[in-house]
Image (cartoon, rainbow, N blue to C red):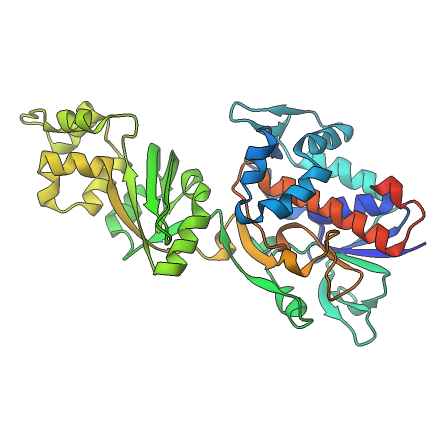
Length: 415
């Protein structure tokens, strides 16, 4: 029986292990953490968003420049196929009002338990607290384990080591120098789906009183380094150092890349995107009598709380007292963003093993028998189920590729 080592016990690695076991290989899964799927469980804490129900062309477009590479993975294992696979585990799914797909109970733990049980029943062996350290001189895999350093021989290897976000859960990017030393082309790991720091930081007043407060129904607009305008509406949140939240995450890639090219980016925040500028001018210019500016804007325009605090933070007193300039700022408040938050704080990371270094089955061109899958590949996507879907699909492709490589007689059953 051919032996295949899967290094990394997240969705991509577990999917590769399932395909390999179904195809007749002996599969050993190695993970640095005390148990498999830890980041997967964390992703499900607020509701396990497994995929998205939007049309395929729109779905694929979410992967930006890497859409062509991800398309081939999704052609082989689509979002609908993923839903069917989950339901075969006994986990019912449903489509939410946003088009996102969730398990019926909204939890990751039951899905992971059922999956791990099925994998063990199929003969997959798990080795936790085993941190991969590359290869020995004779080509064996090296691991730091509870028993010290061990060497493992395998006919093929699937690497599913994650990116560099949430390092406390195992995805720390420690594999980058190991592959780079072997000549593998790896794009630097950078934050994706992350918050951003404002230039100069917030005042102590804003940090202590309003950090963590949401700005609901706003629109954010900016021009990237090439002059292309990006605009999106939604909800964001003030943080200790800047802004974060779903609206910011959706634009994180162009924001990050523009800052890298220019050193900073000025975004325009529309605090009242549902109101026409002339209406805002009329509301702000209405006589307020003895009322304070805060009371006036709250009653006439709906500006209160964190929105009012942000106006006071950014605008000088002269603009706050000038109705025309204040109205303009409400519709186009300039905020200078100086840096993304560190990759360790990001929901996901971009960068990783470039697809150009891989063949169509996700095998490294320079390391025969070594396949890569999941977030360690050079792609990124917004939240909304796109991240997990590509991890599952790439794990499946890598597993099928490893089956072909080792020439299992039952390879067709795993495909």
